[in-house]
Image 1 (cartoon, protein in one colour):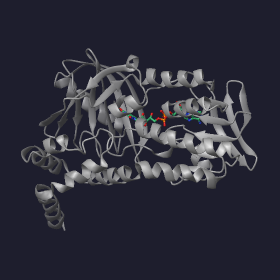
Image 2 (tube, rainbow, N blue to C red):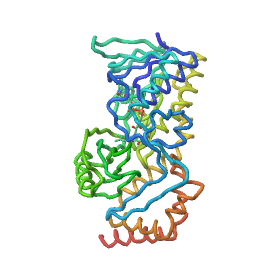
Image 3 (cartoon, protein in one colour):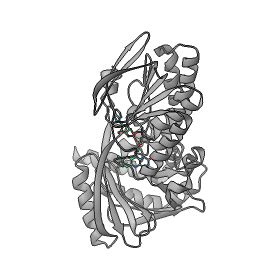
Image 4 (cartoon, protein in one colour):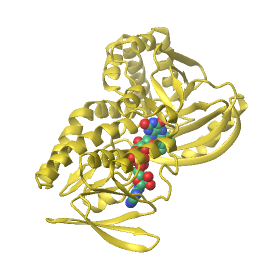
Length: 392
Ligand SMILES: Cc1cc2nc3c(=O)[nH]c(=O)nc-3n(C[C@H](O)[C@H](O)[C@H](O)COP(=O)(O)OP(=O)(O)OC[C@H]3O[C@@H](n4cnc5c(N)ncnc54)[C@H](O)[C@@H]3O)c2cc1C
């Protein structure tokens, strides 16, 4: 019987498996797909802090990003650039394989094409029901880590609730013409409630995508058509789609169970980036699990420390980020245009870029700093209020 079964061999599941195996625990990772890293549902934009902390190797890095262009609905753009690299574009498939290989080298066992279907928990252990080509079978373990990404049913079956807000995304591999910077497109028409992107992944290649409150594939095809007409995209490729949580799971632990990564909703609501927050929470999960296993106490009381830990680390940024996202969703394209004008004409964008709060992965401080430059923003809020009163 392995000490721990991990459901899901995404980056988060493999990182947990690796750390636990290094601590001497026996770990079995069950992954429903035959290939690690497939299908790719990620643009692979990873902040420098994450790349350095988790030693993401150069071999999986496709390009570096020191600048980005942010486009308003009318097509005007603000270009922000820094001297230092802010983020890297990684080959997500290759990155997942690296993390799985690290876990295997540390001693974790991988069962591919094996889907965790059900879970039974009692005082003595967990019985994990998993299905592969040979049929269904129960596997006994001391603890189950659910790292099965967004949309998994397992947490609901365990009575941990459901993620109450999420957004759907779609992206396409494309061939590009002279696109060497990340481009971000803001418009409620292009990507209702979120934004679209074109990310260079190498010479003449890129990923175009968007998150949207509705019909992401339809909106993506419209965006692609527009980018083709502008000469930025020269050929279309494969489309993939997936969801991301905007809120966290009501509870991320139970007796002998922890939920980590997208499955727990540990994703930046501002950008939809989930890899770094997932890794940080995975570290906290390992700390709590190691203690629980060595004390032979994997009760929900003992494991509740995990939720306390990750909320302490991420709670503020998640809350402020979610608030900002909801605020953005209520803006019309005209209001977004006004916001762009203010950000540029008053030098706010530049001031924020140069502020001590400018961090690729931490947006709470930056958003609060933005509020401090409220002089012109008050105008925006006032304008919005006038507009809504006018409607009444
Ligand atoms: C279009 C799009 C673009 C994105 N771009 C970025 C980006 O640029 N940067 C960034 O940081 N984040 C991005 N994200 C989010 C990022 O992909 C996730 O946050 C990240 O993959 C979460 O890792 P994870 O290990 O928690 O889950 P996942 O990567 O989803 O891995 C979960 C694994 O569990 C497996 N699984 C699921 N159910 C079961 C089961 N019952 N039994 C066994 N296995 C199971 C799945 O097959 C999968 O391999 C993007 C997401 C989308 C949809």
